[in-house]
Length: 407
Image (cartoon, rainbow, N blue to C red):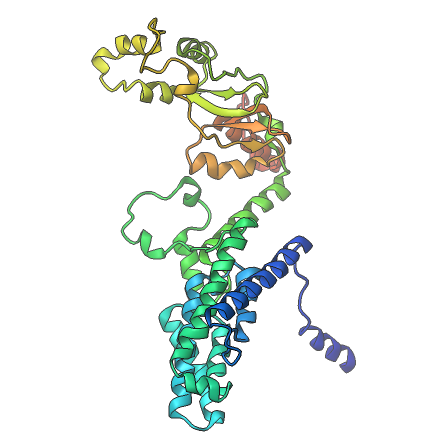
């Protein structure tokens, strides 16, 4: 019994399995090799090929793990890398100068570096190693003095960040991964976005993080997005995954770039719709025309002459050259946000509720137009999914039903 408990206790020290795909692991490893290689090469060239100089310090390897392996981490952002390493170097040099015994200077440098990085808002784990390097590296570093913080520490850090900026963005990873500052909402008295009026709010998340009271290796914005994505995933698991292909309108009237304004307006009015997609010859979406586009482009803000001005706006000009828009392509909104036909409809909620999109064109795997989803389609499908899965006692009277009261 004791042996089983001991094995279980030891099992707690084993790392849990990660969800990082092999492609991402390879991307991070190749990026670190490329970043460290360029940093070493350029630093070596900048120092004039002085073999006695320390052109690349060991903590850069740890910085590369963060910059290329977890570029979204707050600990891997440019200010954290450069500021954290330089501040720690200054702390380490100072401790080495005033405390002769390395056994005392090294731990003090590590702890004071953490204090300095917290104060400067540039917490970077490799900074602790930089502080120890400044204390323990030997006479060459001690002779360099505070210049060591500039070369090689600042030089190495800056070159590594520059390589991270280029490589991460070229491989589809946003860097720097700037977090939204809570101070931006201090004087914001506007109503929250529709999706923010239900579920948890920004204040709820901030309150929980404050009570948690520890450093998280994930930005606040990313944490909020993870929670929201989890909610949408849970909704799909509970009520079934309904895709855009299930609810979209397929028999949609479309326009071309060269469709005349009068014809486009007649189609909008005849079919009682508020927007029509504009397609090219390959049936790919190049724009969308709404009633608001007609009103905005026509500058129809004088309601006393609205009817006459609108007729002049959509009427075809007989002259060879005209400054007035003549065809749909001149007034359509572009670029257009589209979604794939296999996209779950719950992912459209933020787009329609918060971004104010009323009509979203749907495309297939080949990026060709196959339909359109409106706010009405979304509301009806979400309502129907909840109604079908709800227990009979909680549904209440359905559409076209009357609740009977018995005595």
